[in-house]
Structure formats: structure tokens, C-alpha cells
Length: 99
Image 1: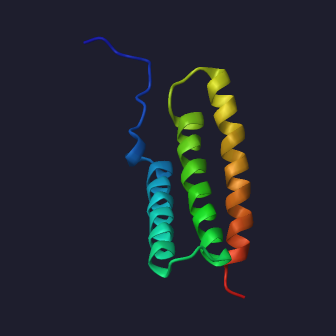
Image 2: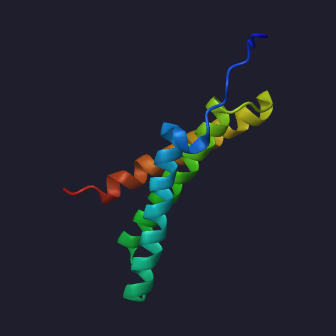
Image 3: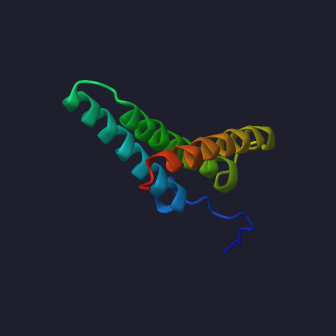
């Protein structure tokens, strides 16, 4: 048997980033559904939708940048955009948290 020194790349939904990205996508879709039921996009619903989209994007890009096997320049760009999405998420969380 030949031994391999390469590490296995974990599947997306078996990682923390995949689970958190799925939760963010679910919350994004629920926010759109709530806005559709109410009939308007209020500021509070928009903040929740943008925050959930940022969580979904940040965690998906974090998987791309840190867990998957892609070229270095692609991983660097994904890391920058993941950090920006986490910044948007952190700002949005401050607006949706109860006082």
C-alpha cells in the first residue's frame, strides 16, 4: 500500500463554515419570506437580510480560503472578501441585538 502525504479536503457541509453558511442562507431566505408576507422591506428586516447574507458569504469564502485546495492568489482574495463580509455581519449584528 502506498502512503499519501496529501491531506484530504473536508467536504463543505461537514465543516463549521459550511454549517454556519447554511444557517446564514436559511436566515436570508426567511428574511425575504417575512418581507414578502408583510409586503414591504422595513429597515429592521433589511438589516437582518443583509446580516444573514454577509454571514453566508463570509463563511463560504472562509472555507474557500482556509480549508479548500485552490491557488494562493485566489485564497488571498477570498480571505479579504471574507473579512469584509464578517465586518458587515458584525456591524449588522449590533443593529439587530436587543437593547
